[in-house]
Image (cartoon, rainbow, N blue to C red):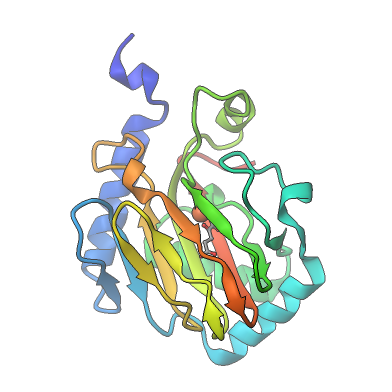
Length: 222
Ligand SMILES: O=C(O)CCC(=O)C(=O)O
Ligand SMILES: [Fe+2]
């Protein structure tokens, strides 16, 4: 078998990686994390304070234990509460479009925005957002959009203590700061999954942590 056959969506991941990279590198608001292991960018002030507050309220309405209500493929160590935001809500649609525009990825490739809330002691242990294509779940995911390309994640509130996003292989910890959007390429420039994107939501020690995440597929999602 060829390498491409072993790495589904490789060419598409390579193409979207290059497009998004070019766009972010030309964006003065996007700060690139200084590492050659992964493509990670931070955009400060992506969401206003009012938008963050509204999103936190919406998350409280939909949040359910992540491990019970979401098929979590990559880890059994996700103790936060989470839930999808209603994609038909005009406010949610607006936020979603802004993320699509920032990255220049077609809206149809984006999954529904997921909200997540961590209380003290809760965490999301180290995992990759890309799918392991040798696992059973891949049979379904292959047909509903395929491999994940980029991830966008925004912090919505200040956390009293803990709750940093830790890229364990890169060795970078990003403290929650409301309105900051993190985006990263789950693939390498050649379109293969990047093991160095392993990351964790470290335990919240005091306070509550709210985030939204939007994962993009290489093809139309759903
Ligand atoms: O909460 C975090 O810092 C990480 C969240 C995360 O890894 C995800 O939503 O995929
Ligand atoms: Fe993740």
